[in-house]
Image (tube, rainbow, N blue to C red; front, side):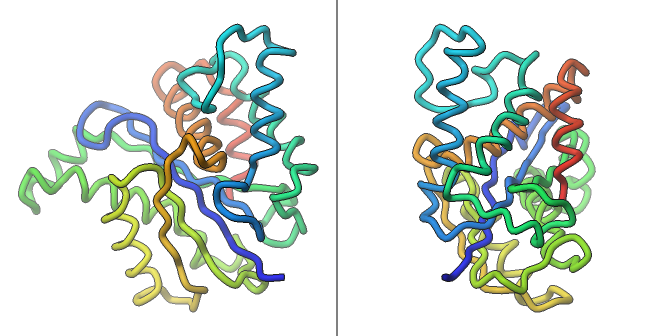
Length: 232
């Protein structure tokens, strides 16, 4: 059975302005279609919001901004447990440098400072997208570190960002990695999708939002600790 390495990508904050912008990647191995990966685990997590956390609203899409900040760390750990029996997330304990069903990478920057610095080298209107592109390249670094990830059982890498705003950065980064990277890697397919129909993007949204919240206020430390544990 062919295995695909999925990297679901989402962001928190605005890449063109502000003090905190976070891009997060949720990495997992699956033979399922992109819209099915994490589907069962996310459904169980949504159900638990009502049964265990007293959430009164209707949750059509799992988004960090709609979740109780004080429970984000616990929710992410619960998601990990649900993933073991999800049926769409592989966990052979050999892909990452830790024995967890999924992994995380992330990058945090100050867009206002970054834009100001890049404006010395680029036309100012181009600086924000350059920052976005560099942030994406940063979270994909493990693809060229064999000590951090084992790609021997992977047939295809599928990069799945949220929304068309990622089309150009994703195409540029994937092309550069395959043409100029130091190690040979499988083909990278870019598949931009609607987060409402893609549970994996919803997981990366939780990751990015949790990290940005902690960078801003320091009150999401349990989530950051968990995400640090599962970095690849």
